[in-house]
Length: 432
Ligand code: SF4
Image 1: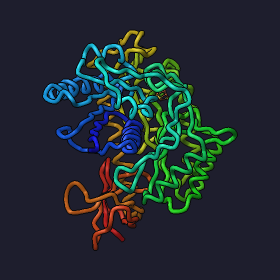
Image 2: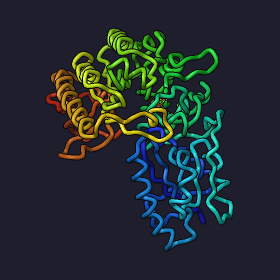
Image 3: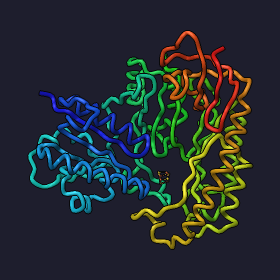
């Protein structure tokens, strides 16, 4: 009888893609997916180490799953992903009910690992500087959009970030393999592919750079939309900007993490660019790519961030006018360089700074979205809107769009919508 596999995923889109990859590789050796823990033979918790609270949630969840394990000792409980790598030494002591601890470079071995009898937890967190999971096909969440990991690891060593330690050095999937996997996804009916990598635009294959890969995907018959996340601002070439400007299925949406607008903070973060260089990149992209939406990441309250430096970050929002931003207050992560520094911005002050940047950015997002009122956008339909009787999808700029249409469209249809109204997070309208 096939064994049933339940995977619970925490963290970023790369983890979601990794869970799909694990499910695909275990399906090949006889596991079928289940969406409940009650009938699972194997439960894998795919973890995130990026923030302390992500880890806290996983510890809590492992406590709940321990109860299941007590009731059904034959159940296999595994922790995979970045947290497995980060806390391999403590996980067995804090969560003895866990049978497996498997890091992000060992998923190919999971089928074999699950076959083995064991009395003590099995730990495999070796980093492998060549592992790119070639020949394992990604799958789509909804049959319409899919994530395709084109490079793994990171060489940047930002001082606040644990990723280079838990995911190892940068390595790229070959061009042929990316195109083969993309082809397969399109043959399976996928309309939109989002290329994934911790520094996705650092992708290389011999003389080929990220721009070449974008241009190759632009020519892939049947592929309606191509996106990518997350690029590093220091890794963009002029050719990559020119490639995105060619348009076609290359969508005008760019997530460009700034983190801080103060040069001294950027230097202490080891980000590899100044605010002026970042602003110049934004202006070059906007000049080249019509209607480009740019989103960003910001951290406030980094060790040593003065009030004036924080103010620069707040002020940059008015200057750069991002479409949206993911904003965080700094929290120290053990194992990173910044963890050794004095976390000297008081918690209440960090919260005040965060609330102010969120309020400012929300107002700007609302203003930017309001400029779409009266315009037509092409929406890739993903399903019914969560509220009301409308439909929901994304515009080329990756903006949420809720709209009325008759007769009902099918998920995966492209529908032209006239935007009538907007909020900071959504465009609202009706099919033309
Ligand atoms: S570029 Fe910096 S923030 Fe991004 S994954 Fe690498 S080290 Fe972390």
